[in-house]
Length: 270
Figure 1 (tube, rainbow, N blue to C red):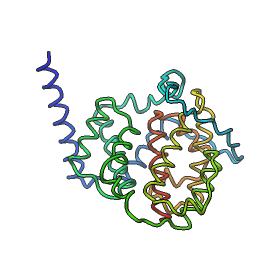
Figure 2: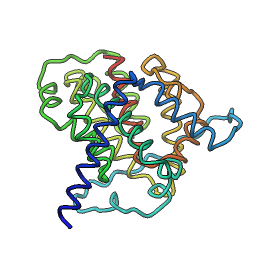
Figure 3: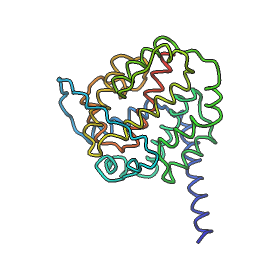
Figure 4: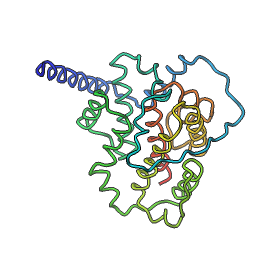
């Protein structure tokens, strides 16, 4: 039994390696991959009319800081069951989308290209049931990222202004701009992304408030920081577009988009 399990693991790892080699040989284009994923979702949705009215931002939920609170692990509710358009894909397509996320994750967090070893390691984690946010944390809590947090990297005025605006509007937090300006930009990106994920997890599990929050935020970023993105999906300024997208994908995909968008905006501003 144990030997068969080991053989299965080795075969799976070989498949990941072959997929990675194949993508590299085809000069894998991450931007096209993201836009292609959006096109597929668009076909599943059918053509929808753009809503011209603005959505109203929902109340920002209070984050429970109780270490014994296990609500975040509750798998009930629509948010934890949605995403059939991805779940029903063939295994090879899932690998490609996961690899696309990991490649972009390295570029947007560490601002370097992940090595084949690093990509295969994290890809294997995702294939074994690991989460996208878990992959993110393994990078920002790793020695390479933490060493950047120890460096003397100044924060631009644009990054300070964005932090004050973003945290007050989307996280219901108030920071002092003078104190924010003293922080290391790498630490700021990690901490604000983590706080954003905490707020996202605190929304009701029926999804509506989270979809609205995500849609307004995504539209806001697309309008004000359009040049931070190179994907047509992220450049889209329509609130209804992002709302419908969030309804159709797995919760982890919403989280991964939030992670990458925040890091990209800070990279652009700093």
